[in-house]
Length: 135
Image (cartoon, rainbow, N blue to C red):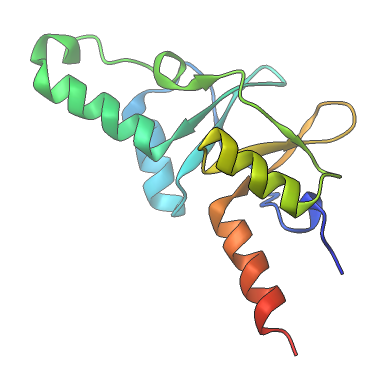
């Protein structure tokens, strides 16, 4: 039975640099049907940007038109230095961590700290469905 994060994470990492515009990031998420992006600076994980972060920033900008003149970049609204989980962690530990931190996704890293994927609520739901409906 595959109980490790690496077996259930989404390995196809879609990322943006911190300098990307919020509109650009929003368009990527809409086109790809995803709710979060890794924010990569150089070769390093700088942060995570969620669909909620984008919505909140756009709502704030709409309420204050003056702020829209200098639209914020991804780097100004992302969650910097996100908590990560090792790819060798169990799915149970990942779910418990997400529940405790009240986050909907965790970046997954290898033993060298390199980003390997993202484990999301959807990945956990897929795990539950496959485990509870398997014959």
